[in-house]
Length: 248
Image (cartoon, rainbow, N blue to C red; front, side, top):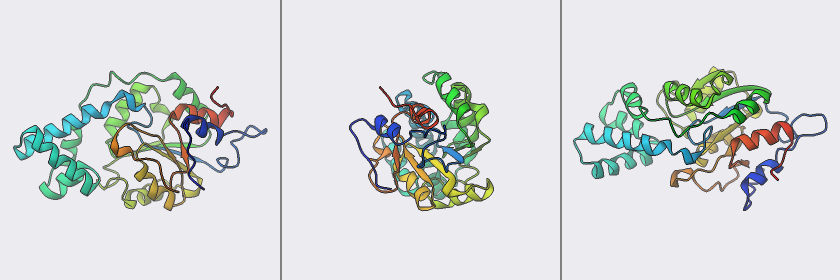
């Protein structure tokens, strides 16, 4: 479908997810049986800014590993990200880094900015179908974050970077592995992610996509036919999907 834009992306999202009189999601989404979510800056708001902590930990890891000052370590860190999709992948390819040690180090952060979300918990409870998390982070980090949000019990699986064989989104390989291992039908799956480039392989495989705009340059601009919906607020989007409510 054509990408839709508005000065009020939440309103766009809600208008695209009205329910019909039968109580089911409208024809655009009533085929959805699997709700697939990225974790960071998607299930919690980007303003929590957890990534600033993770980014600092990554920088510290690179600096220590390569015996660099923080400024030069950041140059290397961002190059790995651009060239390999994640800093971890670059460190594994170029330096043989143990990915489990790296993930434990960089996700040792303070989750105080993330609040319990009764609203998200309630709407996930009402949402029909299967629910999974697809993240370039670790299972442990996802469990910590969803536990802090109070929503961990809703997800049947967390498909993390280890499950992806440490090949990160947006490489198509982990999407294909996820579909195969969890018996998903792409055309019955909707995928939410804050980085629009991660939606491109999902759309190419037949998934419906939802871009959750972030506040970093890595989030993208939401342009392109691979972005089917825009949701500034995931909870509001899901609430609109199940209840047909529009922001007032």
